[in-house]
Length: 146
Image (cartoon, rainbow, N blue to C red; front, side, top):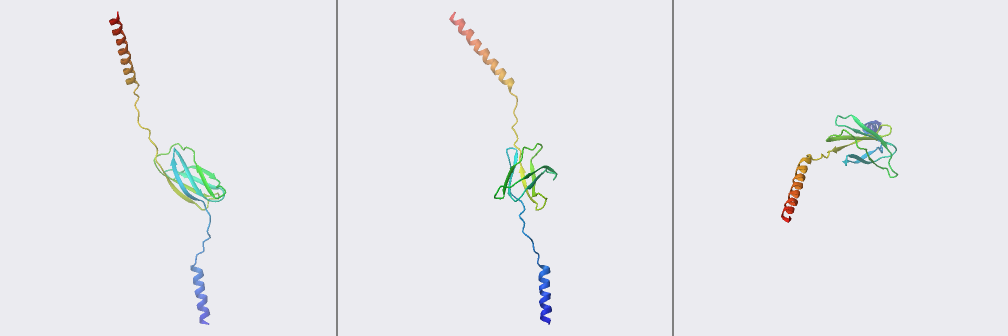
């Protein structure tokens, strides 16, 4: 009789301490990059997928949905988003009902245009001096020929 109680206690403890998790196929971001003023996100998933881009203050600034292709891969290039500054932006994807969230960080480094000066006055002065020099040469040659 003691063996039965011992067996029931052992099985109870085993069942109560074992966690069972169901494996789900939520969307996963495999790559996120910033190039040519646009953000490209690639990943895997099934069904309609929500994609949200968060700014540096963790506020959403862009949201869209994407459908994976037949093999479950998706790729989307976001349009140019005004107001981005250098920094790390968070991208989150989830199932269409908002479950199974996956996130990745994309580093944005803006290309800065080099400072250029407006050198038109220098060009005008050099051009004027060239014209005066040519005119002077023509006048000198005409005087020698006459």
